[in-house]
Image (tube, rainbow, N blue to C red; front, side, top):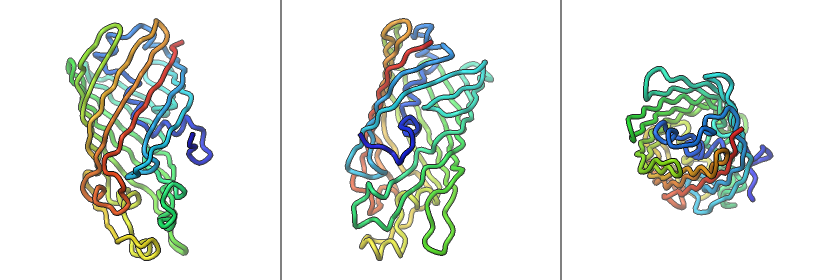
Length: 275
């Protein structure tokens, strides 16, 4: 297993798309058991994802899954953070949560010659999301704004902070029965220049020390791809969830000299019990 810094592994899963697989759409929820609406859910999750954005190697993570709801609006989750959600109209859901930002990079995972690039630090982020459901169609727009350090500055310079990303997911429920819910869709992510440069850019000093070409990343679409997800109620309490995705790095991100593989696969699976 690969560990992300010394953080508990459940925090690592806050970076994963499994949060979306674990939360059924309204149409899917109708096919689930009553346990899905329970105020408490415990379980375990396994995640496979690239070692860093653009990597050609995967890493495997395992972690506990804990979710709790407090009253009608508030939640605490190892997948979706601390926050609240509202349903102001039929088919419309709004949420705000403090989460661990999904964009990071460890120096030790990079090729030795790239050591001067440094880490992209873990940091909390404010995530705002809106989901619109019409029958089997679902559309979700979310934004993530980093609240902490993005990367350490060079000697004598300030640390870089901030960074913002926006993600759009559109999916269609292929099947919704009491024993199985299946959905598939497309996903697009855009980043501001600060976040894109931290993850995929190479400045002049880094180019000189790493022998990479200098590369500047502008704001814009960073990736686009497809995903499929499934939920299987094993009995009235236990549920199996899975999500598989394939994202293709685009634009300045995809053209970065740091990218060893433009197509980035992810796989997340969980078993959980409602209480």
